[in-house]
Image (cartoon, rainbow, N blue to C red):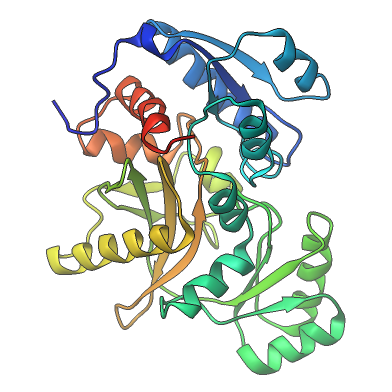
Length: 314
């Protein structure tokens, strides 16, 4: 038996509300993740039920007996500290990171600033709020660049750009999703994603896609995305990547589970991109793949995440 597995009797979790859906741009992904988690908890014998976090959420929450919440809300309204704060006020324990870590990880800019302050490698960047900002970023950072909303996930609103006109257009497009838009140096090289569960770094996954980058289509819809486990690194480099992941998560303060996205450049150096504190749990999702490589099936993974809610003190 893996040390990550839950040893708790399924009935001991009490009545568990699976929170999914929501109103963020990642609603559709969350609905799929939530349905998978809910079905698995029920199969395991947990007294679980689902709540789609819509405009009637507070009314529904007050009507139900809820002993513990399993958060499967992706993006704003569920992954950004607001749901965590609400549940703490209601005295309901929940899965995943607490208020501060959730809010920090959802903010790509603040996350990068924390990493930079600790000397952790993350691509050079700038904040865009005007065409003048775009011009300055082009002069300072050069091309190519990647533009991304600072508070979105699932690669929503992201674009790779190779010139000033493209940069301005991409900034305008990203602004439709978020008032704060970030632009980063493009790191040319392989991408890796690394899951963390109950303080343990799981086997890294190497990603490959014919798309320009690992975008929404590549993540959730495409059949030609490549997932490499083992990830293709030698033992020393894989150990370095796992250590960097652990430091990145510790810096942000994540708990329970998370997923870190990292690029490697042509010189073999790693660059931290972001932390996801409520990663996807669909049939295309990466944390279940990493868990399988660590010896956990989907049900064991879901129960381990639920078990971690006790350890986090949420």
